Image (cartoon, rainbow, N blue to C red; front, side):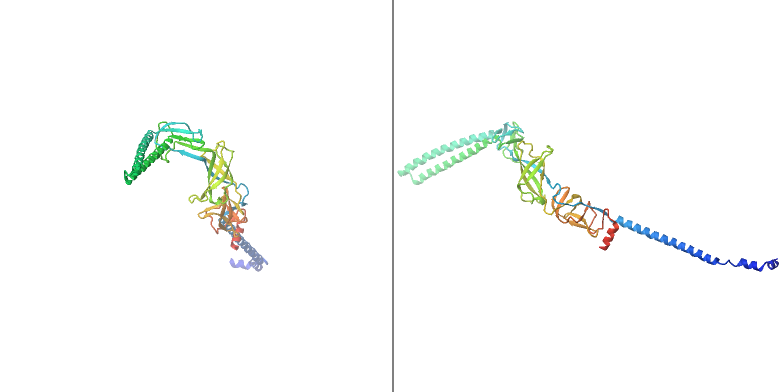
Length: 409
């Protein structure tokens, strides 16, 4: 069977089945090249995509790593409200705590708190039986001394006459004259003691030392009082409220501007909307090392007695700005152990910490005369962790631009 099958097959048919058609090899090669090109494009596209994604991720990471800051608005000094406001302590122009000078009991009192009094007006009387007895004894001692003086004078005169007739010796006459001199001194001593006690007797009457108002009364009828003890509770306090003193503790940085003659305005909580005018008259001319402040004294007229001694007042000074001063918001100021400072963005986008020379502290802002200029980029609300040399970017600016600027710098 196989042999006959092979004999019967046509030779041309066998050759036509085994040989490929013309041009098929070229098509296969072209298809292979196209497939390879597509594969290469896919590989290259994937690689480029991964590189671009990596670059975008790196850019985003750099963007997140650089802190974003905002800049403070700087103004020339003197713009806006540059007044200095400080708390002040109001005191009476004259205030006298009146203490007893004699021992005894309060017999009666005549003026209560709030009562206007005149100089020399009787406020209270003290009953002092011990002092009265001492005065009586002093009068008796003076009478005895005067009697002895008169006897000594008579004796000395008689012996002086006897000396003229040589009836007595000169020594005896001089003894009598010496006795008269001693008796005279005893009289003077007794008079001085009596006058002292009479002066104390006058203190049984408590009187006002000047025109004013009774601001305190601690005297009650029958109360035992003791001489001296100025640190104890006074019987009365009399204050002159028609004119007041106001004491203000001014920081050292303002002492050069606070000079006598400067006018200030005062406000108190009980009179909202009302202002009082005072004049700076004295300064302590010394800085308290404990507070770093100088005491400033103002005088203010108080004819209607609206202001009260001992109350709190807000004192406002309208001070001229310092020459060349620059005003910086308080939110941009950094408090350091060596003073106040600010964080500035340098040309290389890196932070510079600069110490300030403060002219005035205005509360919401500070006026400085050194450390920064109007052209500097001062960071507002700087983070506590911000240090010199840190790279930052300004809000709204490109982070990559800051990175490039920093790398070029």
